[in-house]
Image (tube, rainbow, N blue to C red; front, side, top):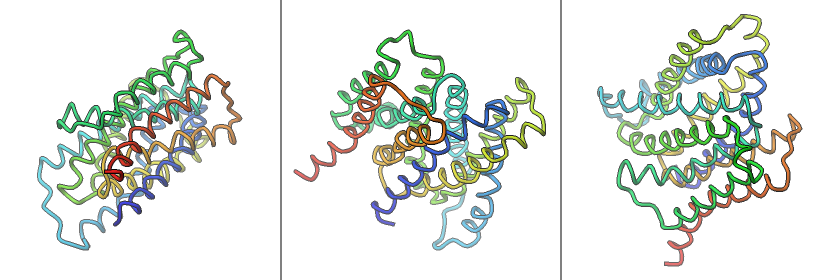
Length: 296
């Protein structure tokens, strides 16, 4: 697969996730956040399971054996996915779909930082001013007053760091096994199990509530999780983690678009300026290094 095709898959994943923000918020009119996560990832696991069987039984080329260390790596990615998903979902209780989408997109900035901390992969110098621009965007998105930041804003920033960790680890580990769908299944099952445990401890869920949120569960389970996360893992086999992050960050724009269309959300001029700064930081992180390469 060419890098262009891989990036197109990542862009499609971002679009699917953007619509998923709307479903994530409306689902909590009937379900607690952890019950929703558990059901969403249960559906996703069932969706991807037949494809995992095909990947293992009918590979197009010989696959390396799966070793215990590979499952440790896959489970670690699953832990990052659960942490990011939980923080984002709980954050949606107090902030809008639009804000959540743009703040989640900060993983574009966090990804190079984590690559340095974990694997000594130094980013392009543009990352440092881009980080300051992104922080200024968060300030404006809060209305120009840090006292306006909701707990959900801070949780969503934390979720962005978790997504960045997931992107970095997928980029680091997927090439060693060449089993993107198996990785997807493991991270889905880990997230489902942990969310189910938390839900059982702190939430009360009824069958009627599950039925009322059935559309959101099915949409996010099949499309925003089973398909989109698998597209992410497949696409990351053929592109870099920072480049993957910029295409995946398109979910921010799609979240704002669908939030306006479906939920009628609007933000003021100051908030829009903050969104523009955050998106500019995302673009700078990826586009400036690529332009420098072409000029050189």
